[in-house]
Image (cartoon, rainbow, N blue to C red; front, side):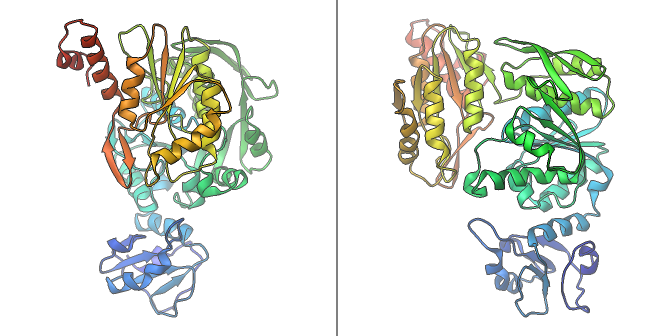
Length: 497
């Protein structure tokens, strides 16, 4: 493709007669080959401008930059992130223009809301693509994912694949990182949904205002917005965005949609969603007040897409629980185990509040915090966990390149503000085994932080760590210790690892 065609819609400066044929686009200098355009992007730890010379030596026909290198091959732009995303879209003939996008952003709830919406639309016979944290999907085809929102070229290739397979809708989680880095180019959204905003990712955004401003960008490219106004940032958003806004709440009568007659149980939530000409009963098979928020957002979205209220409610009721989101791991024992992705202060507080609403025995919370990430939230999460649990097991999450004991000590600053008993066990596998071995009748063990993840990142290496597998092996061994004379391997087989 000619360079000039790739640059359509992008404000830039280059020599007028410089128009090579481009065969490949990349922002990774290691991927550069003959005929490539190399985009020099500024990141947290690296600046692509430092690799321009290397890219040219490897055969790049042009470089996309934000400063003048005084070379013929350069294309100078104000924002190389934004220009690169648009170039990737142009390279694949802008597949997004032929799809209907629904975007969900917020600190918590993105995965649940997108999965409910996809489930509803699919049950209504629509062909739907899903882009999210757990996995990407094209109708029923599952595609593994590394990031909540893919990098620009991966994103464009993915949605082109969806278009080629006749998808009509794309339902996607839109992360604050992706918005700040302009990964989705100038994609237009039919509907944007805001769930909430609480402290997270400040290692990247630095301030809550920057974090909020990134989230707000989604509503600048949306026709309609759905906003949760029980959240303080939701209230702020409705007064600072150009699109048509609809609000929802569980307590504010001024909202366009309100949840009433809420019933919370250990297995499901039940409520009536009300609004103009609406009073529909909703049952969603995941416990917790946050499940009311999430299912409300999905209901409103599908109603705006023209679906029937009763059919939407029926489809919500038939949604399968989502892996790692308030997921009950069946133990066949007299205690309970919940696996949840909670890795921010607000999400940890929410899942613990949910468990407290139906618990019969102790709450034993096992959790850690990620390394090389926002350190400020560690003592906050420690205090939240301690105040809302009867016993804590502080362990590793994804320590990455930080010493696990250092992360744990940061967490314990908050824990020690309370008198809640705790142990610290660096090895997460051993921590889970300890929790199961010491559980009592009616206890609930919360495994927080990993959720759907089946790995742990230690240093820069991913190692296998599937909490469900660890749980079932530990349970099988526990039964043998109790002289139940059961074969461990047979038990593991029964638990369907």
